[in-house]
Image (cartoon, rainbow, N blue to C red; front, side, top):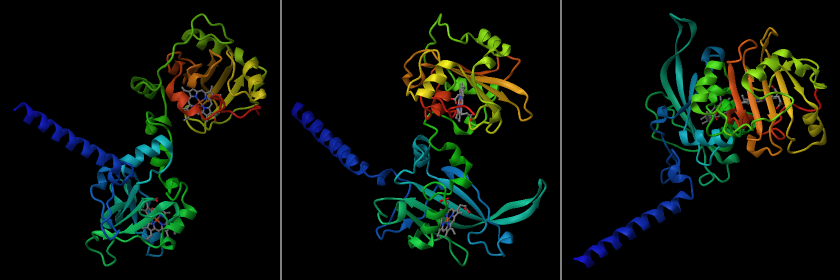
Length: 372
Ligand code: HEC
Ligand code: HEC
């Protein structure tokens, strides 16, 4: 009886091990974790369930703007598999094993109760592109292109043959913004490109105090490291004192400052609104020397303005340690109102939402130096 039990366990263990090993072997490719399937002839099986993937966008090339015959009529709903979207968000690159699907929809009507426009009619076609070094080692970028569209209308084909390079791949290669994919027409993808795993791209570009609160509930705008107490820098670090210091305008006497405001490249309030940067001598000297880490005491103040040039809060970076420590050595602060110390987007050391974007600067500093 006992022996039988042991035997059973051995059999079970060997089955499980075998299963794990074979999983592991297959797991080395992307094949078993991609959302597409090739049949034995090397054709792509028509993707299923893609409407539950990530919806990327809808370019429109209506027949009536293309001499009655658009190359790809008319609305193009583009979807992408969720695993590759996550990878795109994390790394800003296309995963080997990516699939994008383009569903073609005719224009149904050009007028609705909401106004004139192009409204979706019937589903008329389906195309796809996949990136697969295993199946298409010789295609540029390993991208291959497929169509399931029935040229006579009616049912879609169940499988698709890869087109020759010059039919599809070449145009994508020449004109698409991001390695064969037309991200210039998909803000969903351009906003997500490499933002990092824990950032929500749909919020990152538009932060108001209310959104900042929602974010801080999510943790992204919370301080991740303690701010040292009793530290005397050129600016006070307490919430009320710092706000009073900024209101007093004392930072305007820093000898290093941008001559005028210029459109922001960052999300500070809103892309393109005016900002003006002031730096104290410590950071200016360090930037001049080209240091990879700026010393304790470095202070940068950024004034923010509304579209009609009214003052609209400040963003601050100040070094509370000599070491940068992945942004924890920096104190981050942003207030989105000149008259309300409570409208803060972030305050404290190592704020992830700030760090994630600033990490590409030289020790977090993004403004180009010398200041203009
Ligand atoms: C003359 C250039 C050109 C050619 C040739 C071309 N495409 Fe595209 N393709 C585009 C553009 C531009 C977009 C994005 C905008 C849109 O959908 O109109 C796009 C988007 C796509 C997408 C959505 C994903 C992405 O990469 O943006 C798929 C899938 C696709 N095309 C498949 C095909 C297939 C299949 C063929 C060959 C039969 C083909 N394309 C040939 C220009 C081209
Ligand atoms: C989406 C990216 C992004 C995020 C998130 C971000 N910044 Fe910035 N920040 C920039 C860019 C780009 C600049 C360069 C100047 C400009 O164009 O506005 C900048 C400039 C600054 C400056 C002027 C000094 C410098 O580094 O050039 C300060 C201060 C600043 N940011 C503080 C913050 C704080 C505090 C947070 C978090 C509450 C934050 N930033 C979040 C992109 C970002």
